Image (cartoon, rainbow, N blue to C red; front, side):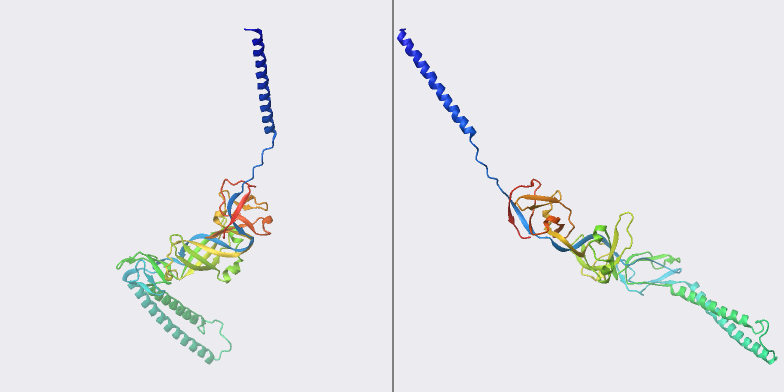
Length: 388
């Protein structure tokens, strides 16, 4: 190869190297410039949430508790005397109702009849003896005066005073014996002590009852009573005891097993705290339970709702507003999510009632209707208000 050709190739190689160097340098400079440029700020997106507007106000507390409807009286009817069952009422059947004073059973006891007859005879003899003693006493006083004695004799036996007292006592004793015999004979007819429902029967025609023997089990029908146990926090929501009793405070009674409901009222309050449960009992009455429509049957498991006194600074919210972590989520002044822990002050079938924090009582606030566990505080939100 000629020398001139070698120089030409060398010069071309140098030119290509320089061109490559300037190209790479220019590219790196552009990249560095683009890296040093500030990135455009990304706009924060607001989370869409459904809210309701609430304002702290006063609400009457609703106290709910469960209990069992029991009859006012439960009685195992026993015979006071012995005897053979000679007659039974057709109403003495399980499930039948009887009125106070209805004769349920008639017993036969000849000894009781004889006892009455003997007591009458004894009383007649005692009364005769009393009359004779009165006559003898009058005669003794006449003889004392006729003898010309002044004053009373040294012994009252002379005028038969003790004898008269004994005769009077004999009459009183005979009368008491007759009354007892007649009372025993009267008890051969066993009657219903109150308006009642027959729950069970323990006798049959021809059976023999000893004194104290079981006849039947009766439940009174004039009133059902429901005992509900309330914690100290529940009692704080109720008016004073005198107010509860004097105004016959109404109580709504609902069946656990159906949609049946009845109207009751407060009839009593326990004046002690159960040492085991640390609760006090309140007794609710429902008049004529079997005559209600539908009937309130003994043994029914029910819930009761009792309206208490007005409590201030409460938020009334749907039950869905309470999160699984027992939090209430709301929208703060910066339109961001915030929350606080709480326990419902009381609840009813539709709503929960929350004691609003002191700093949230000054104006209406937007509360999340149904918060999710994934919510994070200070998240920007776009609230959509719903009617409560």
